[in-house]
Length: 172
Image (tube, rainbow, N blue to C red; front, side, top):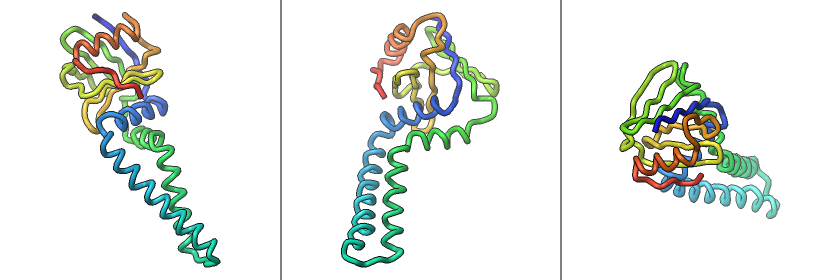
C-alpha cells in the first residue's frame, strides 16, 4: 500500500494532537490532574463566595475566587492551550509534513528532516473527525490529515494501520 498523507501543523492539528495525547498515553495523569483541579475550584469558590455571604470581605477571598475561575478556564481549554504551546515549540521547517506508508515502514518528511518509522514504534492510534494521530511517546505524536490522503481512502489507511500495529483506534 503506497498511501501519501500531507499535513499542515496549524492550531487545529496541534489541538487534535493534544487531545489525543490526553485521552491515550496521558489518561491516568489527566484524571489525577482533573481531580486536583476540581478540588481547587470548589475550595476557591467556597473561600471566595462563602466568606462574602458571611459578610467578610477581604482581598484574599476575591483572589481565591479568581484562582478558581482561572483553573476552571484552563481546565476547559487545556487542549487548545497545550496545542498553542506546542505550536511555539515547533522546529522551523516542520509546519508541513508528508507521510508515505509502505508495507515495512512509513516515512515522515518535513523541510527540516526525513525520518523512517517502524509500525511497532506506534504506541496508540487515535482518530478525530479530521485526523489520524499516531502516538509515539508521552510527548511525541504525528498527525495525518484525513482530508489530504492520496493513493487510498481514510478507511483503507485505518485498516492498514490497525493491521500493521495490532492496535485498535481510539476515537478522540
